[in-house]
Image (cartoon, rainbow, N blue to C red; front, side):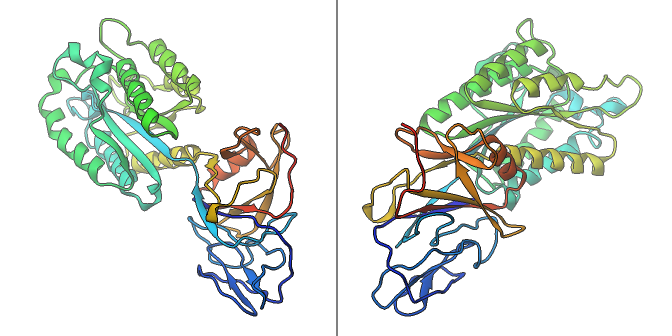
Length: 403
């Protein structure tokens, strides 16, 4: 998901060239033009001046990385000579993966490895190597993660992930899971606890340190088949809720994937209380997986991941420096949204108060550094991740930005 931003220029000479292209390029003379992705082109006349408003979305190929350049999408002329590339804010997903004995011990029916661990792991590994995950960065932390109970119940134990923040897709995550499986199976005696509160606390510390060096949108993805258990104190459901609430106040969301146990004698009750963690983390309800049928478990996990993938999409678009050293003018900007499924551009309206539907705003109207999609617009983007966002710099004021 990228946006192409064209630099604005002065003048409004008409062109006698009027063409569009689906390949990037520039040309001069009658009927020549430039275009890229979903965007339309602007033609140039014999005198080399740029022409009338383009028809964004009327030409070019559609795709997940489509973008528009050239023609204006609303009032004002798009006399762009070049384009600068901008993308959605980088998204970082910190996975906390439960490797306690109940996931694969196979000592009783509801802890059967083939019904819980295998399908969940298969779907997890697929996410990390899926080409559709490109653009995300992720880390992976296993919990419990120490050979002694006292170490497992320490937040510091989880502040360094087993797989550091890595661009996706990547095989590193599957390799880490494959490496830990025999270790877990062979040492079940110390993998029986579920120190969720300490794992979350340590991962939050890791995220806080990471974003000091790499700003972006961060979220925790908690994958667990049980409630917090063991540790002498500080490891209750309420403790986890407190941690994710504090993280949310620092703009770190928490998603929850709850892995219910297969039905059977001695099977624990459903993990519906995990909804409290997701709600506190600002992500609604937990995604609950019913195990017992490996194929259904894998499919349900994939659906949960797709939901997270969409919801994690950032709705902040940093404004790059205009090309050719031009000066950015905050009142000469048009923004459009184009879905890859329809290839029909929709002009978004600037509204710093986000009071209306289909709007966007600046992060700081006095000194903007990013475009932020308002909530309803953001929801549309998150529901359809194959989108392009066209941002044109125009030659005349089209916005009234409050100071």
